[in-house]
Image (cartoon, rainbow over all chains, first blue to last red; front, side):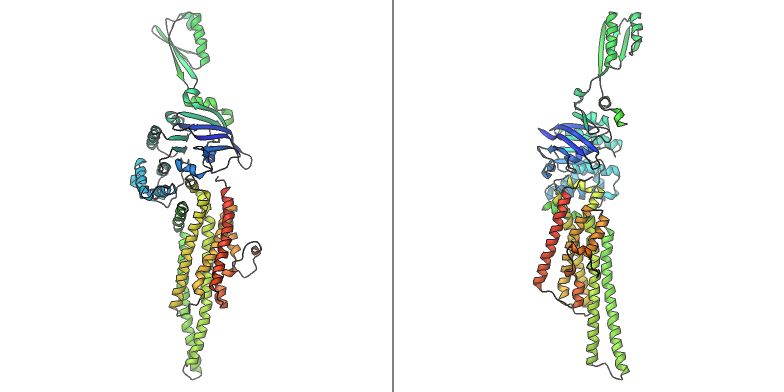
Length: 303
Length: 267
């Protein structure tokens, strides 16, 4: 089942700035989906369209099979924006109870649910304090708590760890992994590629409003090169290999040849074949998300 | 309905945290005290003047003299009562315009609107909740003005008059209209400009003809201070008609505001 679906979604702002251009996206139930792209790629615009903050120029967006404009779709989702703007005159507990009320949670359950979440995000001791006295990091954690108040089926996170210190960032990742294990669908926009790589099932890479690539990390990652191990490398082969871009390391009778790309690997394999060298082992290395990301985007357009 | 009430309750909470609003309400109480003192002083000086006049004629202040002095006090009392209500209504309109023109705009500026609208809250529920919250505060203000009026008249042994029974209600009805206009204008222009336009659109405080009344409804019927000054009384049927009129105007402004708000992009 598709939790999020966009079809030919376009957004052009007043003044002619095209933020999104023909986005087709599907996020399935239970997956953690990373939505990546440089600044101005259209990630936040997509979220704003999904939450009906802005209207699409053309195309459609749906959540749980219903149009995104329908407020009832938001009954089952949680949202954490990049800059968390909370009602400063509430206490942490009071704010969570207020949001719980908006979500139709029974009065008797609101306090219990608020206390549980404050404990979970490490704000139990500050529960009664006014939000105006919270630090940015505390507000971000409270923001996460409010996003989880209805135990959502879909969690939309826009740069969720931008204001968090390393400890809170790790705690956040643990919560995300718990949610993933519980089957919650998570749609996460982040600049921190390592963060996305460690939790996401699928990713989409966006640039200047256009979808560049989408799929699982396995589907997207090509070979990033390989290390070839051989024994008894003849001098002629060593000379021939030094003419390639491969890096040769001789260690006793064993030699390792590091190839940074598929093309270099092909050159090395050709040389070894010509000299009749028997290959002991070929260890291929897959691309990291960072390599996939930079491979997908046009860096000239970014700059 | 529950969601609208929750938004309204939140709106009241937000408003009560605004110092300017609380300050305006304190000014209202201060005015009551100031007028009470003014009337006390005026009573004493009128009686003193009557006694001096009688003394000059070499007689004591008789029943007739006391009656005349009493009439003078009542006339001056009516004037002060009208002036008191003019201030109260002026303050009320200022408060209404302030809270209604910033009701949605403040949430838009602070970004808190996104947190609320990311929940299953429709824009209609949000706007109505904000308006209801503002109007509840205005109701409190009108109630305060009514209580102040009773204290003011009782403490000065003035005649409360029939006008005092309906004047707080008419003030509230007038603010229903002004508030809904301020909400609409704040969605069309900068809140500060909206507040100024809405305030001058109400304009029953200024005797000069108001060109805005060619396109916007007149609030003159709700001008309690002029009713008190003219000694005019309004029948209960008229109060009912005026209430319906205020609700009608407020509903039209709110529908227009809703139409604008539903298509507004939260950038």
